[in-house]
Image (tube, rainbow, N blue to C red; front, side, top):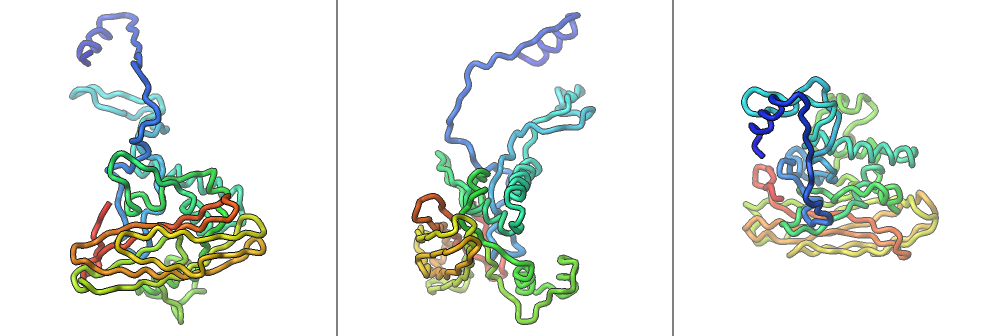
Length: 314
C-alpha cells in the first residue's frame, strides 16, 4: 500500500485503525552475525602491531532509547515522525554498549581481574561463524563475535601491567610528557623499557611489500598466560597457520599446578613476501586436556608500504 493512501485514510477518518501482519518469520539464516559494511577495518594506522578491532558485537538495527520529542524519520518532504522514546539505530554507538556491558558483567563476576584480563577473556572465547558470504577476517571482526557466557570462564587470560602499556608507548616514540598525559602519573618512564610485543591475545606480522619481495622474514613473539580456571590444568597447542606461513610454538604444552599461576610461551612466524601483497590469517589455540576450555588467538600476516601505512583488507 502506498504511503499517500495511508495518509489520506488517516485524514478522512475520525478513528483510523491500522495493523501489520507478518507473512513469515525466517530463523537460523546464515547471514547473521556478519560484519556490517559501515564498520571500520583494522588495524589502527597509529599502532599496526596490535590487532584491531578486538571483537565484534551487535550494532545493527538495535532497539534503543531515543529523545522522546526527537524525530526518527522524514516521510515525504515535510512530515516528521516522532518517537515514543525508542528507535532502531545502527553503528558503533550501539555495539559499544554491548561490549561495555559484557565487560561490566565480567568485572562483577571477577572483581580481581584487570582491564587487560577482561579484554583477553572476551577475545579468546569469541566465536568465528561461517557465512555464505566471504568470510570476515580478523581485520574486520577481530577475534570474533562476543560470547559472554564463555567469557566468564576463559581458562587462561593474557594479562598486562600498566608498565607494559607504557613500554608500548615508548616503542612508538611517545615523549615523557605525552606518556604522563596518558597515565596521569610520573611513575613510568622509558628507561630500558621499549617493546611493541605487548602481551596481547593476538599476533600481527607485517612486512614491507616494496622492499622484501622473495625474502624470508621472521617475527618472534613472547606471551604470558595466567591460569584462571581449575587449580591444576594442562593445555596443548593447536596451530592453524596462515596460508604460505610457518608458525612454530614452544613449548607445545603448558602445565599449571595452581590457580593464578603463569606460564610463558614463544611464537615464531616465518613467511616470504610474494610481491603481490599477500594477506593471510590463522590462529593459535590452547586446548585444555579435559576439553573444557579453548583459548584462541588470531594471527594476521599482512603488508605495509615503505611509509608504514597498512594495506587495508577485510
